[in-house]
Amino acid sequence: MDNSEHKTKYLLTQSFKEIVKKYPFEKITIKMITDRSGVIRPTFYNYFKDKNEVFEWILEEELFNTLHNLILNNMENEAIKMIFQYFGNNRNLYSKLFTINGQNSFEEVFEQDIHNFFIKILEKYDFKINKKLLLLSRENISKYYCMGMVYIIKTWMLDEKYRIIPSEDMYEGYIFLLTHSLLDIFEK
Image (cartoon, rainbow, N blue to C red):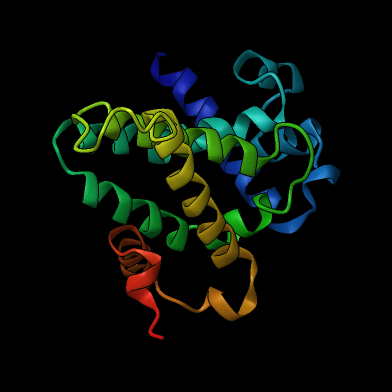
C-alpha cells in the first residue's frame, strides 16, 4: 500500500471511530464515514467491503499486528497486558462497538482474533499434560481462555461499575484467574 492509499485508509478509519462514538452502529452509513473523511463514497469500497470490515481492520492494525510481534519475541505476558491497556485507552470506542449485535458483530470478530492469538501462543509450546485428555486440545484450550478474556473485557467496557477499573488492575485480575484454580480463589 503506497503512502496516499495508507493516508486514505487512515482517514476513513479515523472518521469511523469518531462517528461510532456519537451514533448507534446500525444508524451509521458509509456516506457518513466518507463525508467526514473528505473522500467520495466509492473510495470507501476500494478499501473496505462494509463498515464491519472497518473495525476488523482497526483491531488488526492497531492491536493484533503488535501482539503477534510480541508473541514472536516470547513476550506473551506483555501481549496480554497490552490487550488490556489498548482497551483501557480506547474505552469510548469499544464500549460502543461491543453493543453491536447480530452476525459479524464486533464481539464475534474480537473473539475470533483472541482465539487466534491464544492459538499462536499455544503452538509455541509442547503439552505438559497427558495427551490422552482429548478435551484439552490446543483448539479447546484456546477457546476456553478466549471466551474468558472476551467476557471480562466486554463486561469492563459495558458495565458502569467496572468501567472505572484501571487497565493494570484488569490485567492483574485476569492473570490471577489464569494462574489459579477455582479452588484456590475461595475458602470453605
